[in-house]
Image (cartoon, rainbow over all chains, first blue to last red):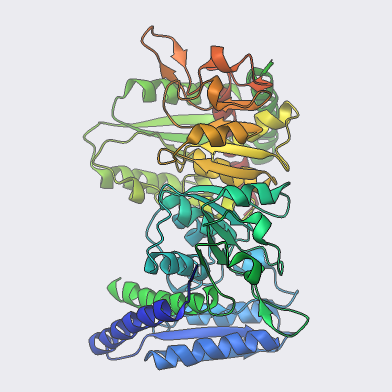
Length: 283
Length: 283
């Protein structure tokens, strides 16, 4: 069994991003800039936002976090995003999730100009992904494709099962796999006898958001297992959607939690930011 | 075995569209209008375009077909589409496919204003469909959902196999099924042992574009079979992707070719046109 650690892949991607950032600075006499909008004081969101800023800085990018209180009026946040859309010095914008309940996700999705939407949550990006048109790709599924490619795991012609159908992970994951010539079984919370289907698959990607959902009974011996979940169990330890100790001995390859999928997401976000900067500079 | 004939469903949808068209005319003192752009003189395209116009007229809508020669310069066609986008009396626009090779499909997809894009081919619509945001839906998969609903065939919690991954049918079909709580197996030309997967499914939707691809060996007894293919065989007879005579005896329900999926597509196009007109009038 091979553990699919993110570190070597993330390092490689970040090294490439840093080179492109240096090139961008030389060509345009300014660093690419990532603006993060954070509403409220959710502890996890504060940690994620800080990490994004630290990594952006480390890779030579400019970075700002714009804070709003939890009771901020959505229109005011929208106006700020609009100013960022219009600011020629801002290349990438992201709005940290989750947002307070006063925000309607269906509206927020349209706020960021697609050319600066480095999370790739805008419906236009979702559509371009489906149609196979080159575009900014959502960070987690794109990171998983990079992780598999780095470890020379091809999905072409393979039977791949995706568990979960969120707009951020499950759905774009299935699209990327299909576009890479995988045959895709797409399961979710309303799937009866899910274990029978996951067991058929040569690669299983689990983004269900349910701690320990998948055990050895649900996995075919020799399968590749990618675990997108990250939870804290009752002992305070981080764990995924997969019962690692049970599945690792029968899998041919498996992502650890933490240290598997998570760091990939952040690296792709940085790559999306330099890509957005480069593409806007060409317009 | 029950044959899923389109006629009663298409009649019902067209009846509803006619009522909405009458209401629109009363409210706005003009009929909704569909503009079709046809480039070249492909015989099948001429028939399809004429049928669209005849049905639009029969349902009380205004209609025009704008003809360009096969050697038309794409920029000129684009300028015409732009004029239609800006014309307040035009509610729906469609560009008949296939286009001559001088047209780049990846560019043409963006020409029609999404609010008038009644084929729903614009990437924005594809993304909204994935994200479950109410939007104009592509006609064939949307028509199949209506056909199944009319015959009280629920896909919720069912294992459904989609064969084919075209941007117009296979991909949006899988999305609509997933959004309706089906578990989806998505197969295509690069799927090994496809018959094993189609045989597992309770509902099989075939949009492979290959005459007679699916026979009784590929279908589970009692399955529901939807055949999107339409071809002319060596005897000059219309046939689908399914070998009807072989599969019909073991299926619980099956769409005939012709008379199954085909007429649904045209009815949904009409519904999309009145929907686009109503939505634009509310802006």
